[in-house]
Image (cartoon, rainbow, N blue to C red; front, side):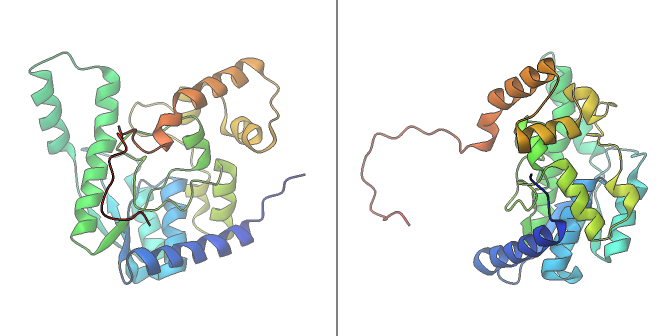
Length: 252
């Protein structure tokens, strides 16, 4: 029976992060958005373990008022990392108003606008601070496409993308980050609903299905399978047309 070893996961992930920076940005900083949820909390803690707190930078990005921003401050203080606060409200409102002045804009478009603006912000901070951007998505979210294309779905490296929600929580407990952040109810902070309300099934159910193939609820199985199939494109490189014309530079 499959059993997750959080200690081994931390050891191997930390080594992988160090190797990534050795090959793709020696001396660079890890820069990530800090939402105050488990994923950004655990990703930041892993980067601190790998690189030291002086090479990890958090970016807090409220859209006006953020009710749980104290959680973001909490993990930055706990880890002792440098952080910046960039309020995206003016940018969000300006973009939304500019588009709405020309067409009807869907509710989902508005929901996805904030994470896309936030990722632009993280990259701006990263580029000005010799950084590499941390993607904080986990396997469970990626499996069913629960991320915003060109928002939280992107980054320069992804330490959590092969860990389920339950496994990310186990890593957080092993790293002794604040337990209230590890067990915080998952929410995108955009639409007022929890992740599980939006998805239609629990992460525990999804995680078990991913790792063992076992699930009791056939309706939930069909929903998970459908979401997985529909969202596979998010995990692949952008399709590009190729006539097979030779290039002078050899492939690596």
